[in-house]
Image (tube, rainbow, N blue to C red):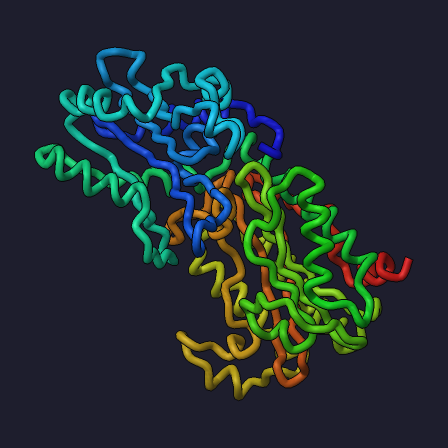
Length: 429
């Protein structure tokens, strides 16, 4: 792995917390993700199933984790099944986990090869009453391929039709929403790498560079600091492109007088950062650009103060929207008639600020977590207001990642330049 080894205490604690939430005499099974094909014999880069990684730290394909806290034999209460390597695999694909390495990475003592799975699993299922199986139940998920978990569900229910089946996803959503100190430290590393990329881009950007050249500056800095690269497909959008919320072509020239909106973030050890900054291509904001920029910044700072234990995302978004609405009036973009004509479903501010302000962040960029439940200490959220004025070819969004605590927030991106004057100074130094 490119990243430094993660303390396996993280995964041991995660498994303990998970086991406490199972019904008595339950077994839970987690499968790794597939390596997905492209064309011919091509494949996409492997990305581990986040639930399996969260509970084991194992970052390798064709892996299975089985947890059975109440099994009679203590040695079989936590089991990792791994792909057995050989000389040919080593020649063509490289090194795979040894059993000892897997123990050190996961804190799990019992490691078997995949060839042993059926026999061991049959032994466990003979005693188990409840079976917890994993599915992707993210509210934004649109799954059109059959995963290893999906195939296993079919196989398991066909082979053991009389067991009582349970969903593991609600448990994982609750657990993963609240980050431990070790997780937050890993996310801080991802944010610090993102900072290095942004500072590099501030020195590089000038009229005439291409959006994809800016993208290349980020990936250079990310990879050289131990990241596998972008946490998500980067948005590098100049001029009017910044008004397209999911613009990812990154193919246009950055022109004098334009703003450049960059929604980018590095991943580190499968944990993600998610930053947005908007800078002047020329190195100086116009007066109008700075007015809009500072309005977005004020909304961002106000929103951060609302991220407190007990708040709920739906109510929080409404409160942020009302604050944004007042800023849009001050900018001359809305008037009282516009506000009066707005509705609950389509308030006036959504003409210029049409997306939410925050989402959970962690192993997934839009991390799992119940958006209808109250915010808790340890949750990590983005804060990303924006104003998009299509008639002025101007889109400005700012985004930091913050941790909720009992006593306010911890801003994981507090060292990344944000104030308009500081950005101008760095671009012209």
